[in-house]
Image 1 (cartoon, protein in one colour):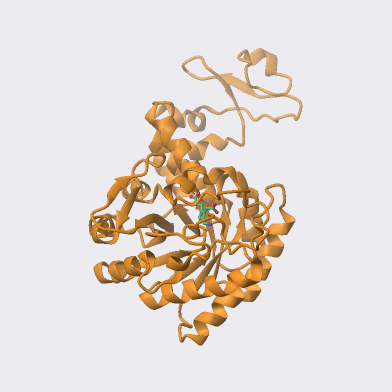
Image 2 (cartoon, rainbow, N blue to C red; image 1 turned 135 degrees about the vertical axis):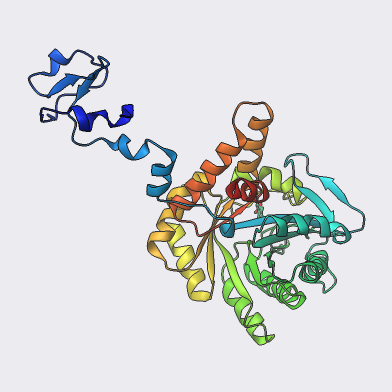
Length: 371
Ligand code: PBG
């Protein structure tokens, strides 16, 4: 008989587990005789007659597979990409190994990798040729993202193309909206520019536009603008709950979007706030968001869970640049097992309630999930 089955063959007494008895660390059957029924295995090991043994269903990989509660699927993943102006550009982003600045003419091999990995969607960020105070290359019809969307749709018509809608990559000051003379980020005048950007992305062929600016009223403005432009089928994934986080550090290098003065705390959320996240998400859903996003993911799993429990809309989580770079840096030093850490991380994000995960690990993870 296999060793693991011996209790069924050899059990002969029944015992009761008392609340105050704790068998861990004790090995002498005699010490339990008052409270536990115990005996020795034919090999001389202590064996209690425990009725409940949680380890039974963890014993083999097959059993573990059968009772596994959470599954990350390739279908859940969205791969972010950085498109730059110019031609012939393919340069690795130093703080984000394996991620590249790509010009439109160099997209094809990378899109091929995405398609090969069967990852269903990409999220596009653009680095323009020139920046100005109002981020005008962001909503130019021949802007870098607009060109990239068209090219990707030509290369891989079935790939879902999501575009990040925000001014910070396109403004000379690096803020997510236009500025007043005193240097404040103006909410309402920014909405029109975001709407123009969203419409131009959608006209180029984007399936989903994803506003990440955190201006109030932007989902309503973008929905109205898309509908008026005959783009009622373009979906909105709003960065509904986006915190002013230190985990965006590597991204600001990747997107060349660090604010030139001040910070984003006047428009992105304050990390200690959880109830406010429910208000933000409720507003975006009312305004017409099809998918709501929580960002970052790992330090905000409680927020993700509350989104899942409170709303029926699909929930996305952004496993951001800092989360990615920490894993890469530790893995490069041999301090962690990258594959296991990535899959465990994605599982945690899924378990907390995400339907979709935006992650720079997407292509690696997809390959690992398929094995
Ligand atoms: C643009 C934007 C940012 C990220 C996504 N869209 C940066 C920011 O708000 O400063 C962060 C993505 C990442 O860190 O991976 N507003």
